[in-house]
Image 1 (cartoon, helix red, strand yellow):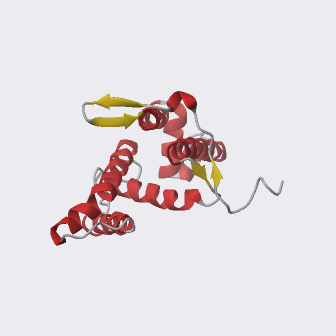
Image 2 (image 1 turned 90 degrees about the vertical axis):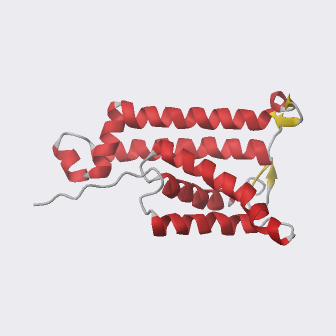
Image 3 (image 1 turned 180 degrees about the horizontal axis):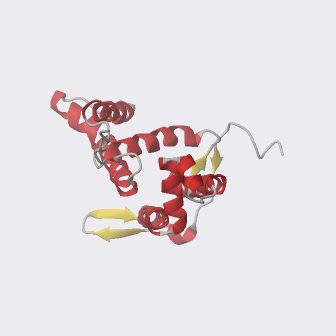
Length: 193
């Protein structure tokens, strides 16, 4: 049991079927990255279908909007909350496996930074909007990848790796200041009495 837990990093097993790359001209795309992108898109599509097109999804949205009113309509809110957490845990597990496939190591605190980045992606896209959160994740990833080089290329300086986090959180702050509902967030109507 002593070797099972701890703060040290562990190597994630290599999947032989995902070794290799696909060649597109001069660009080499590793198979593992293609698999991760496809699996993430599939997981997001399944989540979107569950939330938008099933009875459970309707119940989830009703409980999120007004738990007491949902209970008055016959929805077992405790059961819906439990199932929502189960779905969330499953999605976190899928994300952890996909992350480990690419980066090849796992540790006890690997989800902390990813959780914050996931929250930032959800805020960028619009809280409660699954396609928007996915678009926010892509925007966040692109800004982290290309932002440091774009900012410092004019000064003839190499882009430090740590600058990617500053750009990601700076983007989050700017969105919260200028568009608090996120990029794809809907304007909430105000009821007048």
